[in-house]
Length: 162
Image (tube, rainbow, N blue to C red; front, side):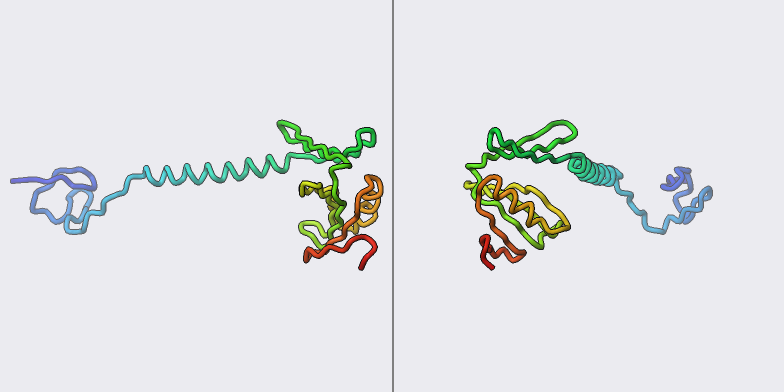
């Protein structure tokens, strides 16, 4: 008598059997091929890597401090950003500033004072939930550069005109 192996439990059963006598596997039922778990493991690893990169970037971004100082001796404004592992500084000389810009209704904060250079670079000097027009005027007078007021639509209003 010929025999066959049960695909479920591996027991040897007669070739004519419809059910395995050990595990009751139905030989007439279609055999479902199992997919290799390798693809699922790779997909899971890729997902973990992406989530880790996003979390690392977020933590790196949250772990920074800003400091802005005006150096009257060198007639410059120093923007310092301190990260967890290094510090970056930008110096903008008063002579390189084209204007001081006061922006209303910005996001994420409704008020912002920015320094615009003659090259077109933009440095955020201060942001806040309260109006900053006094700080913008004071900075403009200190570095002797034009004051420009702009609303959320982008329209410019030079100082003294409404």
